Amino acid sequence: YSHLYRGVYPFLYPEKKPDFNESDWQTDVDGRLIWGIKQAIQLGVLRKDDQVVCVQGWRGGKGHTNTIRVVPASDDLGLTEG
Image (cartoon, rainbow, N blue to C red; front, side):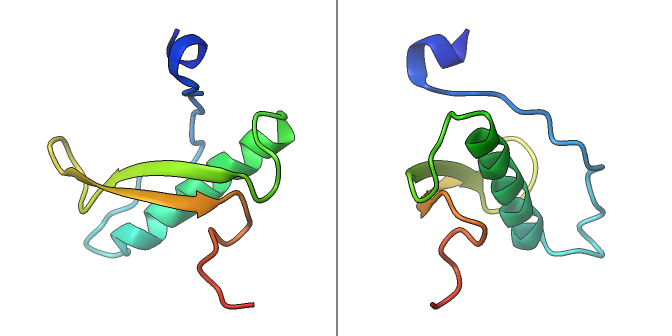
């Protein structure tokens, strides 16, 4: 019921969790955010370039959530210069 009260929409990410000894944590997080934003745009929950508040941790697991980012609903999260 979260989405009814707080504007939170759950999406199930279809990819397997990577081994973070072999892949970069932040790259995986950014990929998940981009995927979720694309899904939300397709469903009409977001429009391109809307502002999205993202909450994440500095590493995986419980108790590490310490970062809030506000990013545009775009294919690159506004990370590339253009």
